[in-house]
Every structure is written in C-alpha cells, then in structure tokens.
Image (cartoon, rainbow, N blue to C red; front, side, top):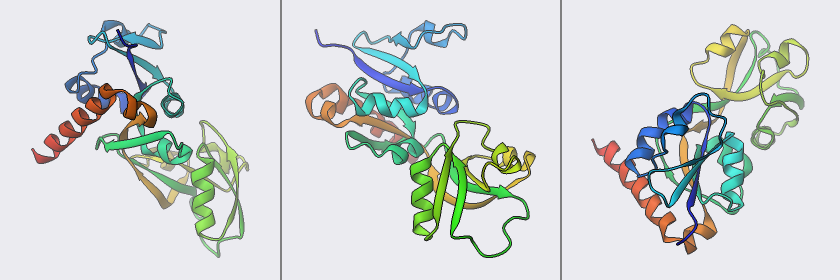
Length: 217
C-alpha cells in the first residue's frame, strides 16, 4: 500500500474559502480538523490514502517544494515570493482574492521618489524586485506582523503588505499608493511527485475541472 498523499493547507481566510472546493475534489478531513481546541497539525481524511497538514502559509510552499507534502493550497503571493524550482502551481482556484500593495503615511506621497528607501514587509524578494524595476534601492526590514506600525514608529517610510478592503491601512493612517501583484489562491504540487505519483495528476485534474465548472456556471 502506498504512503498517504500529504496535502498542505494554510491557516486563516484562504482555508475557509478552500474547504468547500477541497471537499468536492475529495480532500475531506475527518472531524478533528474542525475542532477549534485541537492543537494537532496533521489530520486523517475520509480517503485513507490522504492526510492533511495545516501550517503557516509560507510553510505550505516549503513542505511542498521539498516533497514532504505532495500538494497543497496557498496564495500566489507565497508562490511568487519563494519561486521554488520544485514547486508548480497548475491551477488558479479563483478564491482568496486580495493584492500586494505599497502603503505609506497619508500626505507623504508629495515630491520626487528618493533613490533609497527603507520598506517594512514580510515579502523581501517581491519588495526588492518591485523597487528594482523602478530603479530604486530598497532596504527591506522583515516583519511578520503589525506592519502598519512601522512608518509611525520610524522603522520604515513605507510598507508592502496584503490588502483586501484597505480598512486596516486607513485605521492606521496609511494610504495605498501602488499595487504590486493581484493575488488568488493556487493549487500547488511538487514537480517530482507530479511525474511519479499518478494520484497527484488526478488531483490536479479534479481541481481544474471544478474551477472550470464554476466559471462556466
């Protein structure tokens, strides 16, 4: 009997939107997964040949890229930030929509853009690439949360972060000044597993068919 196929999912909003689609594709976790008190990270599925792991979004990409998980779901921001060669994102799931944007204190936008900036973000690669395209050297201060505090406390003049409604920015005196990347959730798979495990290819086709069906409805 082959080892179970490991499917990695992120905690948070994307997971809430992904669960109905996963269920239709046959990725159905058992009841413990939905227990808010459970601290487990690995869960059995109704299909005994599959297990689910629930980890941080950035770790989803790492587990899949290194083959510890064969497939998973994560935002395209994570895929673009890490750009792992062993990671393949064959299906745009058309859920989890938001954007990666630059934001800065209101009123700061006047005047010429400086040649050097300090920017706070948990996306150092995407941030540097964005400013390189503009001919600007960006020093990126890596933060994993509370990004909106960085300008007011003098840590950075701007932030690069995910934006959905923009409410959090407004409540912290920031305005969105440019959009770097439109984001949606993607099905990701390990390239080697796709070639060697027919279950991975079948999973890709099920998700692809479901997305096409929903768009056609």
